[in-house]
Amino acid sequence: MIEDEEIDLLLNDVFEIYGYDFANYSKASLKRRIIRLFALDKFPSFAELRYRVRTEEDYLKRFIEEITVNVTEMFRDPAFYKVLRTEVLPILGTKPFIRIWHAGCSTGEEVFSMAILLQEANLLKKSLLYATDLNPSVLEKVRKGIFPLHQMKQYSESYIASGGVKDFSTYYTANYGQAKLNEDLSEKIIISTHNLVSDSSFNEFDLILCRNVLIYFDKDLQERALKLFDESLGALGYLALGSKETLKFSTIQSRYKQLDKEKIWKKTM
Amino acid sequence: MEENNVKNRYKAIVIGGSAGSLSVLFEVFPALKPVLDVAIILVLHRKYSGDSSLSDLLSTKTFLPTKEIDDKDPILPGHVYLAPADYHLLIEKNHFFSLDISEKINYSRPSLDVTFESAADTFGSSLVAMLLSGSNNDGTAGLKAVKDAGGFIIAQNPESAQMPYMPQSAINKMDMDLILDSRGIIDFINTINQ
Image (cartoon, rainbow over all chains, first blue to last red; front, side, top):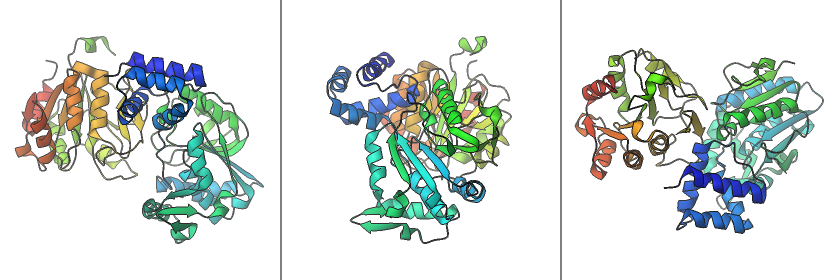
C-alpha cells in the first residue's frame, strides 16, 4: 500500500530536481498511475522507486511518460469534429491566416485530424497548427506521424461519422503494420514542448483545443490553464475542451458563448 | 460535508454493472426512497454513445436527482451519479470526481475495478460496493480493495442475474458481506445508515 505522503515526497523530488510540477494534478489519477508504474517496473519498495527517479535522469523520462496519460485517437467524438467542420472552420476561413493551438496534444492524433479537416476545407495552406505537450517523447511521435495500422479501421469510421466523405485510406500509407500519414498533413504543424503548469502564453490563436487534458488537473490548475487560454485567444476565437470538461465554473466563462451542445466556446469580447 | 452526514456510517454506494445490470437498476430505482443520505455512484459497461440518454432514462425511474458526471463534480449525499461512457471514474479525497481516459482495464472504460479501488482509497470503511450482473470479471479486484479498506461488499445473487458470471467470480474469490436479489438491494439501500 502506497501512502499519499509518499506520493507527495516523490512529486516534491521531481519538482525540486527536474522542475516538473505535478502538485496541482488530480491526486486520484496520479496516485493510480504511480501505483501502476511501481507494479509494472517491479520495485521492491517505494523508496527504491523514489531513489531511481531522483538519481537517473533517463528513468525520469519514463516516469513522466508513464504517469501522464497519453491515450488519444483520431476523430474522437465525431459529433465534435462535425461542428468544427460545419460551424467553426467556415468562419475561420474568412480570415487571411489561421492559427490553431493543440495544448497537451500527446501523440498528435487530434492534430492530424484537424489537419485533415483543414485540408478538406481548402484552408490548410493558410493555417499553422501548434502542437505542444510537456512530454518530449510523445512529440517525437507527432513528428513521425506514424500510428498503428490496426487503429485505422476505427479512425476511418469516426472520420466518416464526422462528415468525412473521402476514402480515409488515402490519408496514409500502410507499411509493416504501421500507417504513415501523408507528409503534406505535417507541413503546417509546429511542434514544441510547453507545460501548461509553468509556461506562459506564446502567441495569439484563433482556435485552441485542449481536450481531455484538464481532467488531470485539480480545479485551481484548471482555472490557471483556462486563464492562459483566454490570454492566448484572439477576439472571437474559439476554445474547445473534452466532452466532460466545462468552462461553467471558471471566471472566464462570462466572456464566452457555447456553440450548441458540443464543448466549443466562442470568445465574445 | 453537512454535519448530519458525519455520523452516518456510509457515505457512498458504488454500484458496478455490466450486461444484464440495467434491468436490475430499472427495478431497484423506482422503489428507492426519495431522500437518502448516501451518494449512489453507478459505473456501467456500455457501448459508447455520444449522447447522455442513459442518465435521462435513469432519472425517469427515480425521485433522486440523477446526473451523468462531469469532471470535478462534487459528490453529494442523496444524489445518483452515472459514470460517463469511455472514461474511467476516479474519486478525489476531497469528494470530487475526476475522469481519466487512460488505457482500458479488463477491456473496459469505465472499468469497475478502477472506480472501486479509487472509492476504497477515499471512503475506506464508509463505502458500500455492489457488483451486479455481467459476463466478464471486472469488479472482482476492486471489491477486494474495498473489503481490504474496511468497506462493505455486496454481490447480486447470481441466480437472480441475467449474466451470473461477474458476481459469481467475485463470490468465488472472497467472502461477500451480503448476496442479494433486487428486492434485497432495495431494502438495503432504503434502510442504510438507520
